[in-house]
Image: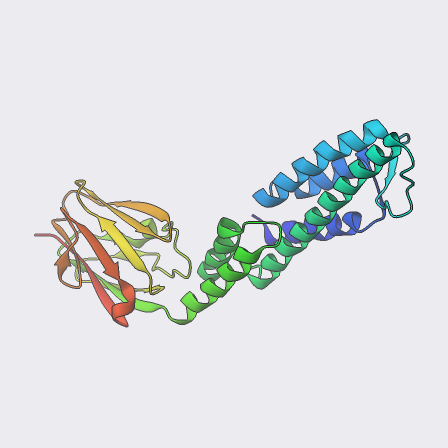
Length: 258
C-alpha cells in the first residue's frame, strides 16, 4: 500500500464525511477513495450503503440531511423515516471514526513502508486491527513498539554449504523483524534482529521448516544438500521444537553441510 496515496485518500474522505449532507453521488466518491484501504472500512462502507438505499427509498430528493434532531414523529411513517435516518447517521459516524483511526495508525507507522520497521508496524496495525473503536489496534501498536525495543540478536552461520541467499527469509511475517538481505557464503555469518517471541518450529517435513508465532505461519524451504539446521546447537530437523527467544540476548542459527 502506497503511504502518500493512502494518506491523501483518507484525508479527502474525512472531509466529505464531515459534511452535514450526503447523496448517492457523494457516497460513491467516498467509496472510491476508501475501498481496499482496510477491511474494517470496507465492512462499514457496505453497511452504510445498505442503509443509504433504505433511506433513499423513504425520502424524496437526492440530498440527505445527516441530522434527525428536529424531525417530527407524529405518524408511523415519520417514525419509520426517522429511525432509518438515525441508523444511517450512526453508521456514518462509525465510518468516519474508523477512517480517522486507520489514518492515525498510518501516521504512527511513520509512513515508511519501505523499511523493515515500517513494514512490520504497518502490517501489525492492519493485520490485527479489529472493531470500530480500534482497541486492538492500540494494543498492536504498543506491542510492535515494545518488540522493537527488546529485540534479540541471532547470528546466522554457514558451515560448509554453498552460498545461500538471505533474501528468502525477508517474507517471514513477524513484527519487529530485521533480517539480512544478501548472500551468505561458506564460513560466513550474518546477524538478524528478532523480537523476543516464542516460536514453534516443525522440521518433520524433508527440506523445510515451518515457523509459527503470533498465530502466523511461514515455511522456509532449503536445499536438500543442507544436512542440518541447528538452533543454539540443537537440531531443528526431524522434530518439533519450541524456541523461546526471550531466554537469551543472543542466539545462533547454523546451516551445516558436509
